[in-house]
Image 1 (cartoon, one colour):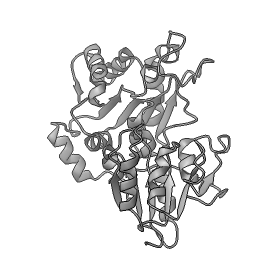
Image 2 (image 1 turned 180 degrees about the horizontal axis):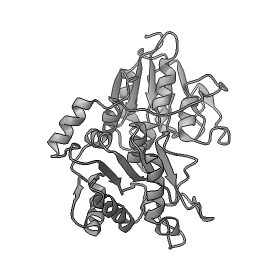
Image 3 (image 1 turned 90 degrees about the horizontal axis):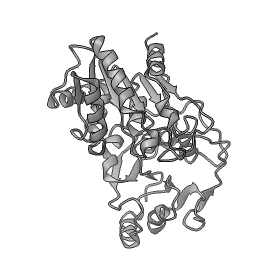
Image 4 (image 1 turned 90 degrees about the vertical axis):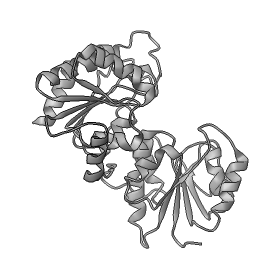
Length: 337
């Protein structure tokens, strides 16, 4: 058995995966310095490869929500004797099974779903003391009750050579004009998506200033990016569905300004240190903010928000419909100052 190796059981969302980086940094600050592996879905490998602290990303070939106890048992047995500690970030009961099956001596996580026994270093979560996801993750890397570091800012690495290669493969160039990158999707649901017509208004504004405008997202976002492009007129490059997660990280790294909904790509942009305006509707910027000094949050803070719903329960979506492009332009101007 390694005396100090740590296995981190990672989350299932892009934004949450970005927010594990400060936890990894705190683990690598230990003495002796531990090796850190992350057990997570295969899609997360491009993110984890951009975190210098990760020795190995271990694919968890089990779909979100699946029990697959037999598969977890087999994987756990294969990992026996390799780790001193496991840190379980998801709150589900099943997510704690594999470290238990692996016989890892110290199994740390928040109690949630009555995971006594599966976890032998079970912590009580004080949501008032730890209001942000990044704080909750980081706290599990410290001793129970230990104070958090003063700054928790996730960071992703971007290799300029790799970025240039990705841009060339997509037929993109940053040399001719600055780049506005728009992220109009949000997998969670419509109540987190700023209207396509508002994104299009931004695109027209920056195109008139001579900027390039690139649209990014997954294949599921293609209908939304197509709406933005159609409403914006000529000059936007729609990359939705044309990039994998690693490539979209490279594209974001090349941007001069990013405007995004509260989404996984928003957190990627913040961790890459890009100038960023984040638009919030049904979600709470106090819970999952973009953690970067180069980010600005725009929200109307209506009495009905944050509601945390996928669709507006009142049917009007005023938190986003009434958030006009001028507010976003003003926030972007602060980043230029």
